[in-house]
Amino acid sequence: MIAEALSGELSGWRGLNNETVATLTDALAPVGAVIGPTYAERRLGRFDKFTITRQTEPVEIEVWVPGGASAVALVEFDDPPTSEVDALLDNLGAPEDVQHNQRWRTGMLVDEYVYASRGLSLSVATPSADVGVTPIPRDSRQIVHVQLFRPMTVDEWRAGIGAVIPLRPFPRR
Image 1: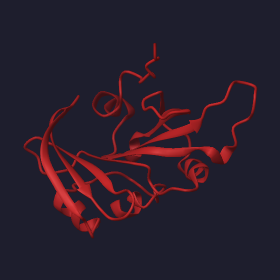
Image 2: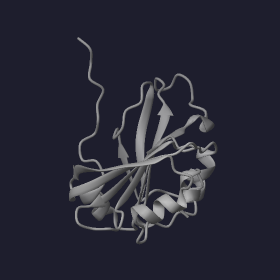
Image 3: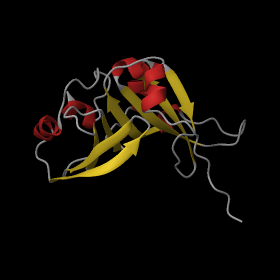
Image 4: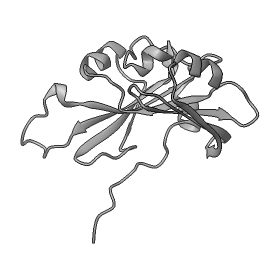
């Protein structure tokens, strides 16, 4: 199921189970390299972070394993090969939570759509336009970041995975 998710088939995703770095590497073969572990921290504590590289998109995948554990807690990657973003979002239904301005892309407004009970969050970028000027075409959105994790409540997601402080562009002086 992880291979399908990384290929952009996210509508059937139902969350990480007891995957390990080894089972992920097998499922994503052929893999170019597994880099790590490197020490990293998140709100949930200490992690061993691995980077899996591949020849196919997404080329780089980050895998987060809690320190001392073997099961993967989080898989992240940018720019999934998903062309039908609106159809995917329609298929997923209403998100359980939406976080605004959690990532930054030039000329885009980025909202994080959270499907915590499915173990999925999608950062969706929409081209910005002045209000009332030109309607933004429905098919112009992009998914710029994906997080895959075990199914949980929205409160658990907010406490452990979700961003707390919205990112803001830094004005030039």
